[in-house]
Image 1 (cartoon, rainbow, N blue to C red):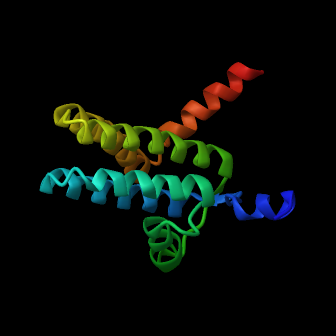
Image 2: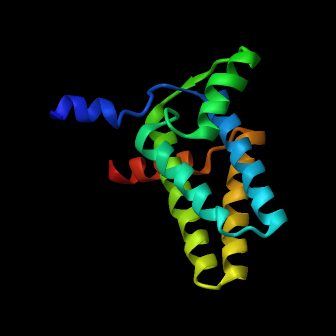
Length: 147
């Protein structure tokens, strides 16, 4: 696989439909709340894997993102295009935080895992309901600092 083919394989959409991204965040919130409500901490690994899929391939292989982009968003009929790189960075932040929660839970530090999950869910709620992408804001700060 050559460099251009490899680049296409790991391509992330740019631009991104903000409404689909917000729906994905809402689905992450619902899944995370279900994990917390049931106490099934092992599902934190599934949550982290979903973030990994979205970081590497955008919505192409992530069940939550596919549901948001292919099923729910088209039915809403709303599109607002925003740059893709900040959204990819935000998915990376979600990966780090969800992975931390999964590792903490597996290590027997359940309270720390649930607090970490709560922080992730707060960020997902901000994105889903207020349209504020915390990861995108961090991305913007990093870009401004790099100039």
